[in-house]
Length: 164
Image (cartoon, rainbow, N blue to C red; front, top):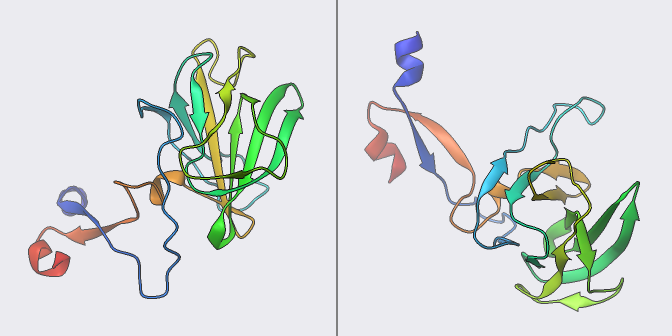
């Protein structure tokens, strides 16, 4: 059984007809993931609702897709910026010192702020947490990031025919 599981290939899939085509780009450069998403089965369970991107204090954070700023302020003790995008998506970034205000309309790649010197949850390292919701539910940002996307497991036998 373990051998069968080990003989699976990861293949990127294209969105189904009618699927939302909103695609995102990395909000920080260079792109390096410090911690992956671990989305719980239920909202009330523990998990990591987004990804942490390695960066440093003072670095620019940009809009991963066009949208409108819906929040720019402090939550608990960390500065946070949220953007509503087309397709029912909302991105949130922390800790980010905003250079935008609520209501500002951003294009993809427009600066929304800089990485704060306030310690985030990656301390002592520095990261920016990118949470992404679609229709109010957290999703994995990597599933919508250009160059990544949803994957499905295919059996190694006949994988080439299935991938075509």
